[in-house]
Image 1 (tube, rainbow, N blue to C red):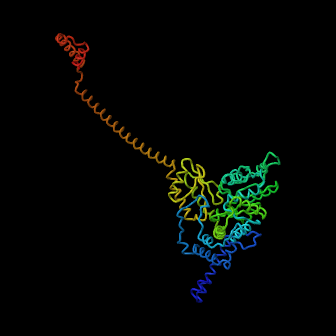
Image 2: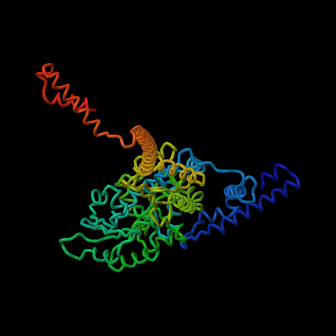
Length: 529
């Protein structure tokens, strides 16, 4: 608005500036209404979204937000005619594949940095303070990855040798982190069966807590995963999470949440991230999944707990120097991606609905967040589907021999969803063995039908020919009968012929001497005929 007024330098320019300012303010109010943010009560600093909602505090961000809404709204002619294009490569392998946005790259380039080992990096400090406030905990520490976040957090809970942690048998910490807690921390895992919704039966969990006996390890912590990856991105109900916390306190153990996609859980549940983890003693929060930051996670918990995590992070090689360049990208992701994170779920639901209409494919229901498993009938080779989609620049990974996993993120727009469905429909049709067999059977039946028709035609012609010949034979017999005079002595003529033959044979006896009697009889018969 100020730039418009300065450029025009007149009353009209001022009025135009005021109009633009009104549009910005209206857009901000619309954004605040459609994307409410519940801030943690312990937050002593302005929340990132609070700054977004205040044009005076962040005029550049507010202007960009307003222009983006104005340019794509239903009342905008430009919005009606502008159609977003799908990405050149549509990558559905994970929400970790996203590239830093231009805003993230600028923030990284301009970040104030220092040596984080000495505690001198201001941007890392800002990130840790904001994350602690958002999740309603006392403190947090920045680590390079989610795997290290779980390793360090659970490792601190199990700092006494001979400790044990309870987790789900399908949990990420149990399957996909190389058994690091056992190999590096000496912590023994005790796995309980996950239900389809990602939860564990708390009665079974209670039965897994060790009694105080020298033969057993000591149970120290219960680990749950939110959202649950291998259960199809299922969102654990808040009531269940709260019960896990109550149970942990009752039996004297800790509750750790692997919050790899805790942002998605909060969006799906419609609550603040802090509410999602209120019952937990510690949380590993991923910044690259969901938010799309290039690197990093944070661990949140009490001051005492986080102090121990910092020491263990150092032993694991996770302490970095000028890490502010990474923290800056995460802070920008909170401002840029977090407000529209729910769209990842909208896109996934649209995608799942379309996939479910393709013959031979079944979507694992319910779809609650940004993850979806697609199961194939045995006649559709998953490897062929994966390879076929790659030719359409759609990248997926096989999950099992008969399924694939799809994950949406902020780079998957509406145009990408349409492109994915087109590609998947064409690829499945080309590799579906049942469809091919049906086509072959149809062709074979058509060939058999043609051959049968030819055979029937030939048979009909044969019957017609035989009928004609039979009719001709009947006419000849009738003509022969007509030539014989009525009352003629046919038998007498035959007898006279036999007599003549006998006379001839007797007269010529010497001439046929030596011939067999059969030949003679044959000659006689021929003569009679």
